[in-house]
Length: 304
Image 1 (cartoon, rainbow, N blue to C red):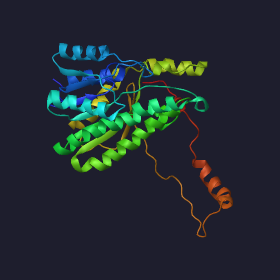
Image 2: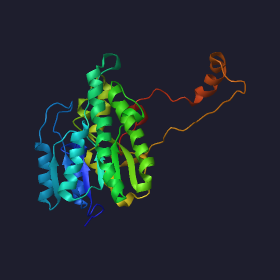
Image 3: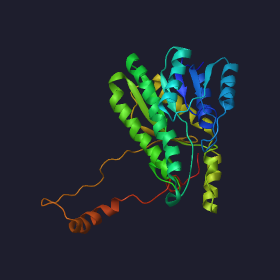
Image 4: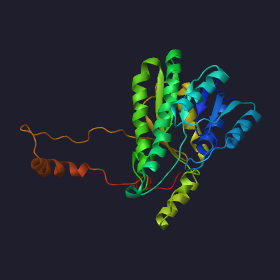
């Protein structure tokens, strides 16, 4: 019987549907006691319904697993802390946090409202911080723990109409790296996953032309259950020694993403002016510039 998470208590946010649900089901099958957190809102974050999370818990319990529902929001410090306390009160400990909760408020940048910006950043970047910060003290005291954060190629590469989402998702990469650095002394790991999977959030992507419609059709072949094994691995002791990394998973393909490092260097002993920078630096660096790609341009082949 699989037991990579046996004896572990795991919090999974946004676990009522889609990727989060599949991670919760596999984590329980691997022996974890699972907090199935889900506010139960719509793709834009509106509303609340614990029904989906309860269905996941019922499914886990029907197969002999252990799980509880938590309906708190990740977007406020107090409610995020309550999610972690659910694990501690119900299971006596917390060993891993899988930050998966998310909403979308897509809008072309020059039309994006402050509310659309704040709502997305509050759930993704601030929410992941709040839940992680609440768990960090427990991990420090017990000298172990794992964070898994869901990022996106919208932030790592780019996409149209997602300045709020892309900024939050790239911010999560910085958050994860900082946690990995700051908490390594306590044997705490922190990693990111950029998932490719069809979900109700992805279903909101507008398909304005044939190429975009074709891309969305490809996404439909990438099911959420393909993401779960990597998330469970990174939450388990099977990944000891792996921290501060950015992984991607696309159907049966697994990626390790690069992280920003200098690619070219040029110096001038007498210093620079705007004019000499334009004359010397830009022409020297231009062959190494990254093109203005979107995620679909970089991952242009059919999923395997």
